[in-house]
Image (cartoon, rainbow, N blue to C red; front, side):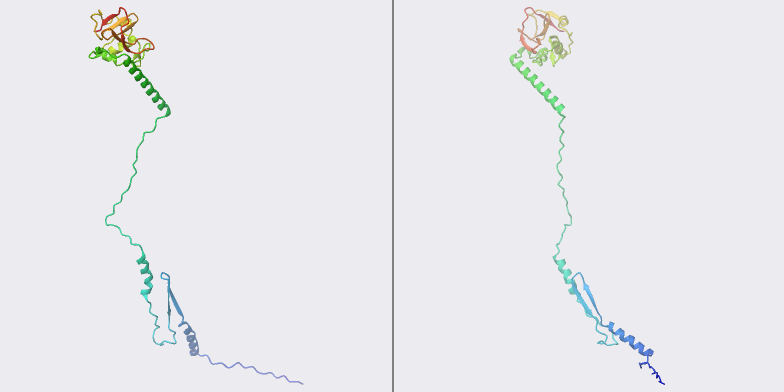
Length: 256
């Protein structure tokens, strides 16, 4: 018959735990944090200043931790260098501003092509009329009897105006239209036709006729210019002109 023997187990011996030992353990754990390092980075100057706190075990436990001194002049050196190299801007006490304004010239727009063409046509017509009048005066010089004679002075203005059947204006005259227009400029109204003008005044002899009287023949009428000349609007294709009296026995009529 066998016998079993049970051995008894015992807890390992350890130091007794008291409130005093727990306080000592917590204090030792806190000692490691006293000597940690802290760094301050100056971003504007690119400098890093490290401040290392003295370990707690190296300092007097009854005194406060002492930090290393910081050189503030070194921190501002970079900023002063930037200010020294910056451009200096100066402004006068009284600033005057000037503006160069462009010169604007208004131009009259060109007329439409239709107006330009009509203007050129009128100009050419006036030039032809002036040229015709000049040629007529050159070929038919104004007699001396015109000077001082109101009727002939008015009549001489229209030398070169073309004959136009039924015309009564400086654009064109027929024979009676010319004489009635000239006298109208002097305030004297004559009948429209040559036959009616024959009876508008007093008949005088050729010897008594004076420059400015009417000279009439059947179917035609003009203005006597003295001597053996007259001024009239002859016939189609001709112009107002001074010329030699061509009638063999004309009638002279004094108006007024």
